[in-house]
Length: 128
Image (cartoon, rainbow, N blue to C red; front, top):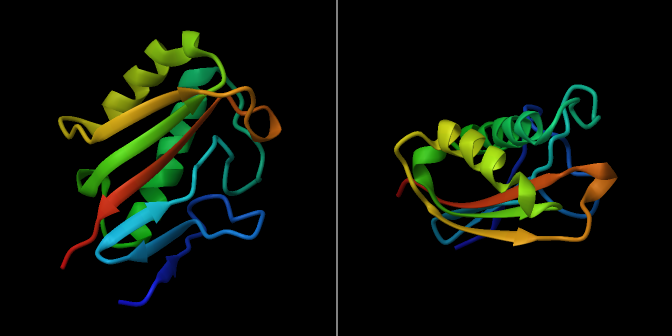
């Protein structure tokens, strides 16, 4: 089965040699998304909740460009600069996913691009 890419203007464009998402063997693999506003390319103002909401809006746009939504996500990985942000991030994450609960890992990292505090990537199942 061929590998394809997904791209949308609803999420920040790839700024390096990668794709917003790649689909292969019935799955969609997104690049990690940070809280960049796709219209300006700048990090959104605000604390971890605002950044997490923007990250999830970016992921939603990529999923929708692939013809799916959060209910198709099977796994996410969350990268946090400060684990003290886990609670507020988790609340924004739960609000976006609603009752759907994909598997998730959360990892503390030393830094993220351009001062971002959270990055999230997703793996989703595509319709057959």
